[in-house]
Image 1 (cartoon, rainbow, N blue to C red):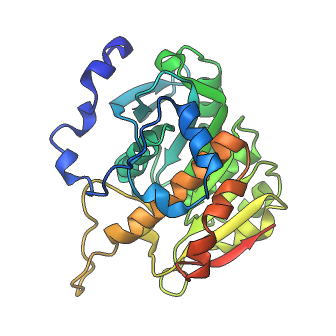
Image 2: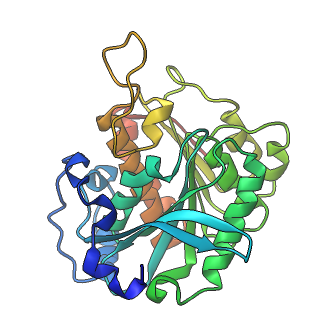
Length: 311
């Protein structure tokens, strides 16, 4: 598909599937541009719950795009582009073990409604995750070298890496090996082995870890990220959330054997996506996670966000 026809087929990838999107409502904000939205949000009290609603921008979707990193290396990806004319930050989302780009479809879509372009990619979903991290770094480099990509609408100085589970480790590894990204958002990241601490200690970009509730859902060596990243790292956990809540596929999560409820819940998935959106807006528009941290204040006070720490 040619890019000049992309906006004429907005919602293409979600055609026939829009009804499956959670009815979260649309923010009443009607900014004329991303700059106006940025000015409004930064001049009002930061509140993560604001981002529970979809943002004010329409979204154009281009699914199953072949990202050509070289003559021999191709990456399958879905673009979610906010329908505005300005250059804007880009969040690149990577899945975890046994998952794919489709498991982050709603998150990518939601970010784009807030003026933040998104790219969900599929890499080998059984690892090796160090290799996936290096591939992520090459993806960032490729996008920075292609200012004409998607109509030149990406601010290549504001690319953010986000990953779930082992994909979070891959995002961290990409930063460690020099990916030219602004920083990372790790969605209940999991440790990938004894080589990970060495990579984490080399990270010199801001990192936010948004975790599940470790009282009910634990992943391998999640503590490594806060411990081994030397500075510029923050972490919160979402009370009662499971590991699966940190992703957001369009299809409901399957029920666990013997359980009457899904292993992931829409309410907690929306809480994750609101935290992700606040963090992405903060890093993409201000260069730090300070705005996001302030936006978490009420959720921390009420116990909705727990395990709060930063250094």
